[in-house]
Length: 356
Image (cartoon, rainbow, N blue to C red):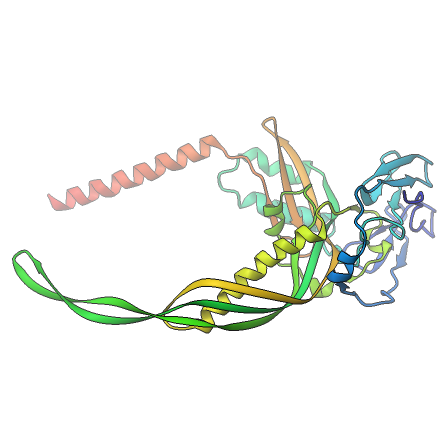
């Protein structure tokens, strides 16, 4: 079990807890506004050997982090890497040095502050045509939580041997009868030829979500992420924000990453086969120099109640891209359908009038 953690940095002005200010390189006090610069990372982001990881013994269970709040002295347990004290709001960051889990290697800092996140949410709400009018109040009334979500990234060299067929189109003249008349037309045919070969590709930073606490499909829709802007992990960047541990192991993440690589390799194979059409029968891929790392990505998460149901919205903390649940207005949908029916009826009436 990890040792109790303390606040990363007390404010140099009033002694309160500071937080990383999105879009800046400073820790800012939410009370007096005092700012402390975040030192530039002393090292570069590193990739880790997947083979070396497999050689290490596996950990069956991971103990929660123990937090000792320096503000109110409350002691709590959590699977979070960083959070706010639930009693006094002090920023807490876990010491992951002795953690049985893999420590974060990189972090993509928040670029959008709460105000800009709300602007993105308001724009998303306005674009929901069939949403109830009351939904417009959500961006103002509901809270957003700045959360770093864990992701795996994988690098690998691939060599793929394939077999398949190349299709080449040609045209023939076909004779047919229509209304007692003999006519001709051009018909396309395809000749198929056996094809086989080898394609190679180097993959860099294939991204896979490492948490099951957020809908994976919705999380994937927040892409693309400017991963090249990520910096080596330092507690400064997560201070004052919530950060989740991963609950998807690297092995599972790699299998998903290979599935994503396979789609790209399929495109390479089809281009290598050439022709007008391709049939891919078999692809055998060999992976070399597989490396990986754990990266934290910034997401604003909002949950709101509407009509007795809970809806979740995710906002990319860099680009402002928004994806989430939304209710539908039965009244708006009904009126739209009725308007469409009326429009069709009007068009039919105009056609009938013009024919008479």
